[in-house]
Image (cartoon, rainbow, N blue to C red; front, side):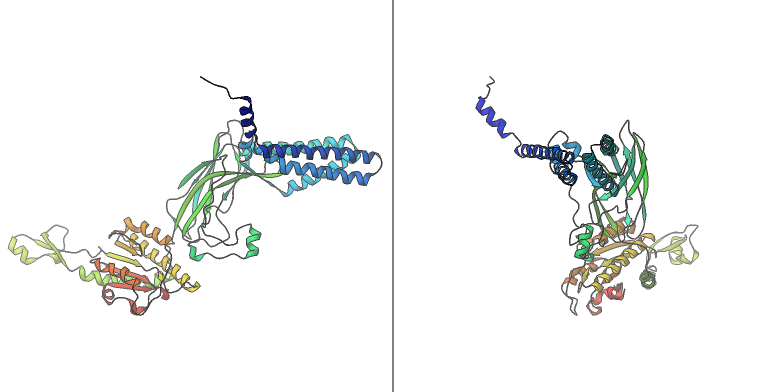
Length: 496
């Protein structure tokens, strides 16, 4: 059976549910507005008594007090009401035109209070109505927008790509005008790439850009504007979209697609936690910005464009490879029946005489090349020159992997903590490039014998049979095991 609470208990629970900070701000706003109203009346009395300067000063204080209440207290009260979902979606920012507009309003307010001219009050009402209309119109423009940002599956550094950014207007009655889309989150004033390449920005530049003192470096997605706060930005990763994209007109219940050219100068991860959709429509008094949450992260692969070092070293590697597999190409694979397309040079006359029919010798394929690509990520130091050479080595290794992919060779990739099987290069080229996109130098002191750190990496090469090794390393020339010199080509990083 339902039993009602006693009156005292009900009153106690009701008092506990009272939002005391909100009521405190409410009464403070009433007090401030009351004081502003009293000062306005007092300024009018001073003007009528002929004390114009004092009346102007008191009127300015009254207007300032009312503005403080409107800016500091009213928004916090509005966020605690049913308008909360409507308010938190939009971020406001005054434009230069808007500041001039406010100064004009301030001058007219002072003139109207001092002169009591009805025409000035009508002009003031019109100006304030323009602010209201601007706010409502821009709110309608930014409402019910969806974003779709399409990126290619594989992205290479230093190679421009063209992506598609689609903005859809879900409103049935109203179109959207003058919409600007820009990236949210991430950093812009820093080097893109792995953490070892990041630089500390000057203190004055950080303050000027409004960023943190130290930069911490950072495929189709869709998102809808949400009332909840946007997710935290990806720490330490540069954002994807730098330049804003402008859409002048989006019809009702339709979409507009813009082609965006992107360029990622360095390898590594790029991330973005959303997009900012802003507008200054209709009068450019305010810039209203709404966050569209669309968390995404992409991996930019190293550049595979041939470099000058690649063109210099590739003929040497190809020569070593040809000499190795040319000898293997003469190994006998099988004896089979003669076919019409076979050359007479390959006829085995002894086997043909025994079988009383033509037999031909089949050799191992010369183009079935097995290559083991080894990248040693250890460096003797982490100074600027060593890191620059390390980046060159990464790009060179990526170019080699892409070259063997284009000639359809059998390839295996080995580095610290990662190894692919020996298979077609088309199957392992992208895992190889993804590993190179994230590889970071490891600090290790080398001795003349190569050190214990290199033993594990090079010892794995002894288990790879019938393959040609291409090794990229920063180790001294006398530290490579002698057993690898006969079947390997070694590229020393300090020579790049």
